[in-house]
Amino acid sequence: MQRITLASRPDGAPTADNFKMESGPVPTPGEGEVLVRVHYMSLDPYMRGRMDDAKSYAAPVPIGGTMEGGAVGEVIASNSDAFEPGDFAFGMFGWATHGVQPAKMLRKVDPAHGPITASLGVLGMPGFTGYHGLTEIGRPKSGETLVVAAATGPVGSMVGQVAKSLGLRTVGIAGGAEKCKMAVETFGFDACLDHRAYDDAKSLRETLKQECPKGIDIYFENVGGKVLEAVMPMMNPHGRIPICGMIAWYNAGGLGDGANAPLTAPKLWRTILVNFLSVQGFIISNHWDKFPAFLSEIGPKVASGEIKVVEDIAEGLDKAPEAFIGLLQGKNMGKQIVKVA
Ligand code: NDP
Image (cartoon, rainbow, N blue to C red; front, side, top):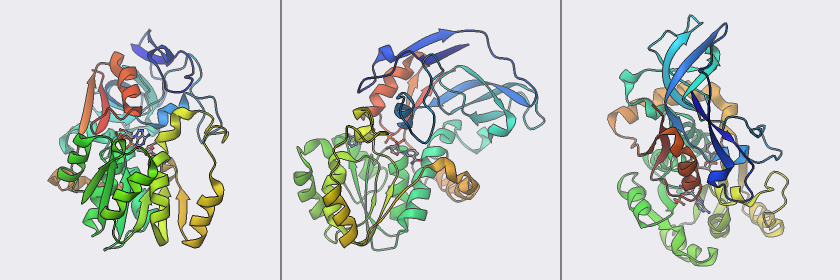
């Protein structure tokens, strides 16, 4: 089997040198375990955090350890009654061609229900993140205005589509004209602004004001940085901000220690106070109990085409580092996946 390990910790943006491809024997499943040959693996922004040795909600990948990640593949050996060879399963197999996991840590994926790649994006962790953060924390109401950045990614596109179906005005923010076109034409956003076209938060805010004439009721926080700065003064009283991610700062380092990111606390705090804002962070892994309900509501909408899916598939495990570096730079068009087998 082949796997990609963490060769060194990045100083700022990751580079190819931080990763190493290694070969070894295919692992043998123990009692209650299942061996899977990976077909597709997911690349997600959270993996950048695992490369730092900083305090977070999850432990970092050790140097020499396999890069962490979710993947879907075919069961080729099973010591559990729950799976048999030929079944497809999603699990945390890491950046590798094969993986062994206890059966109870795996989710069965039925290829008859659609492409198995959906289990990595729209009907997997990121899609569920967008849905949960919007519906449970955003508490959307018809007629309100929502803003979300990384609008064409698996989280942002779910947020935008569900909000639109609930009768909100949806304004996306994305990097580049092509992504903005996709946000509006494919994902049905009412408008989309290209954050790269604005030098600073103030100029971005001026255009946002035109697109959000009634202010902003929900800011679904995916990125931080310039977008957050532009949005905050536009929040309406009793607005809600689900804090999902802050990718603009992931390469800054020291986020876990609060070291490098500028701390503009006084103005931020006052804005939250005087607008009675509800600001709530969440990590989706604490909410898996609600995943079956999400699947039964959104699964049929994906099957019928009501919820659109865009995937960006890199070919070959060896392409994973390059695709991951690209994801952090916004090069992905839709959910970034790697075809492994
Ligand atoms: P995407 O597939 O959308 O990829 C990340 C995108 O972030 C890039 O394509 C790029 O899009 C955008 N981006 C990168 N740098 C910046 C920047 N400086 N300013 C603005 N946008 C930037 O990612 P996901 O949909 O998988 O994830 C979106 C967010 O949700 C991330 O912050 C992620 O960490 C978070 N997340 C949180 C979870 C939780 O449990 N809380 C679970 C899953 C995801 P563009 O080119 O359009 O700018």
